[in-house]
Length: 370
Image (cartoon, rainbow, N blue to C red; front, side, top):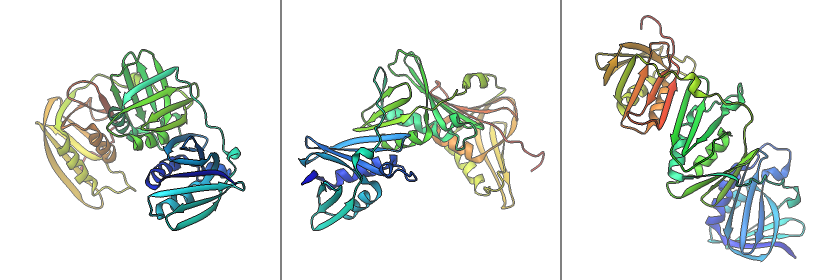
C-alpha cells in the first residue's frame, strides 16, 4: 500500500525542486535537512526545504491518488527529474519510505526519510506586513547587496538593514569600506527596523521578476517573503546596525556630473592591469571639467580622460576599482553626481535628482607620483 502517490507535470515539479533546493543544507549531520519534504493533499504537492536558517515552500497542482508525506534526498531527486524526458512524472512512496519515480519508460527507486524527522518550519504572523512591487524590490536589493560584508568580523554587516518610516522603505548595506542606501515610497504607517542575512536576500533576488507584488511579514525572530507562489522564511539577524546618517556628512567641496557609462568603461580599462594580490588604487584627477584617470602596476600603465561638469575645488583622489565598478554598475542612470570633500574624504555617488540611492566609497591613499 502506498503512503503517497502523486502525478504532475515534470517541468513544473523540476522547477519547484530546483528552487526549493536552495534552502537545503549541504553539510548538516541531520539527513532530513539535506532533503525536501513532499506532502501530497487535495491534488496538490507541497515542497518544503529548511536548513534551520532559511526555509522555502511552494506547491504545484497534479493528481493525488494517495495522500501522505516523505522527505526525499534533494540532490538525487533533482538529478533524476532532470534526466527524465516525458511530460508526466508519477511518484509513489511505500510504507518503508521507498520512493518510485516513473516518467515514460524510465523508472528509479530511492530510499527516503521519515517525514517526522523534518524540523518544523517557523511560522510568522502577519501583524506587521509590507507590500511592494516585485520590480521595485528587485531594484532595491540589487542596488544594495553588493555592499554586504563577506566576513564575520561584524556579523550584522553580513545582512541588509530594512527601515520603514511613514510611506518610505529604506535598504542599507555596508562592509566597512563602502555603503549603499536605496529608498522608495511605499504604503506603510509603522516605523520598523530589522536586518535580513545577505544569503537569504540573494535567494530572494533570484526569485523576483518584473511583475506582481511581494508580501513581507515581519515577526519577532523571523521574516516571511511571499513571491510568485513561493514562501521564504528566514531568521532575523541580531545586533545593532549602524545608523548611516551619523557617518555621512552633507559637506562637499567638489561636485562632478559625469556620464556613467564612460566613467565605468574607463575604470574597467584601468582594472585590466590591477591584480588581486596588490590592490593598486586608480588615480582620478578632477580638473578643468575633465576626469583624468591613471593607473600603473607591474603589469603596465593605463591613462584615460572623461569629460565631466566640475563645480568647486579640483581634487585628486585614489579609488578602489572594484568598489567603483560595483557602484557605477548599480546606479542604472546615464549620468551620476559625484561629491567629494578632499582626497581623504568619502566619495559619494548620487542621482542628479532625488534621493533614491546613495553610494559611498572610502578613498585609497595614493603616492605623490605615478
